[in-house]
Length: 298
Ligand SMILES: NC(=O)CC[C@H](N)C(=O)O
Image (cartoon, rainbow, N blue to C red; front, side, top):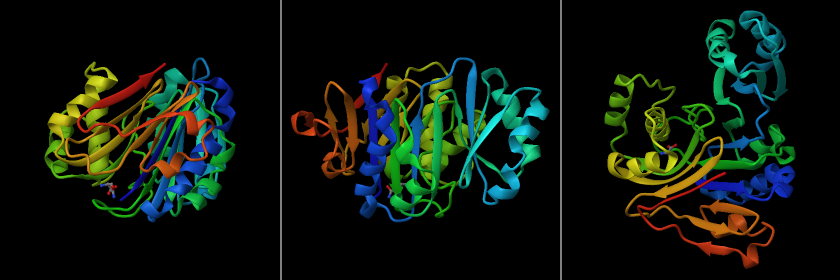
């Protein structure tokens, strides 16, 4: 099981409703994954600024002076917005690497959920309705987003084991299925310098795509490579700063439905995730083909 939803907006008029639409879609998929839930939201990037979303199990202690401490450490203006166990830190985009580095010594127990110009990732153990409420996802606006509700197969039920996984700037991936060769792919990626936070198979898929993108591949090419190099079952939905992609393994036993109108492209593990979207009754609705890469970029 596991439930996936995704929404890539073409019509800017829908942007204020992105969080509300994704929340509704994800809650519909609750019975596909009771363990943990997460959402990646891509907001419109602000020129010269970047965002670092961090999570802490002890937010009161860790977040109170974090923005000021980080600002001092990297000699730049840093602002922080806390939501429950997560905090979004905004800082100059050329100080992002320095900020990640400083965070490791300033707050050794804080975890980086995502980094980039547009992306924010919120994920925790729990049901979609509770996770979405904790982070007030329904009031977030943005250009595209991806949600996931997990029934664990490959690693422990923890915050870091929840999807989406982000292994590169403005990148994320969610997965329904299980990979049989993730340990050997992880070894190869580690040798190439990629680092991992969990024993999870999906994190390997995310890092595989990030590594291909770092090597200069386009999103479509990186996703195509999963079909030859990753073994097992998968439906993947991938997000980048400007793009949104879907790919299923050649057997495609993990369900997937897509819908497209002039206003959006939507993904659901099942059609019922999309029933409340505007104009769904006249949308083009189809099942993505096995071993076929679909992607949209602005
Ligand atoms: N049920 C699933 O699709 C699980 C996805 C992935 N293998 C995980 O454990 O996180």
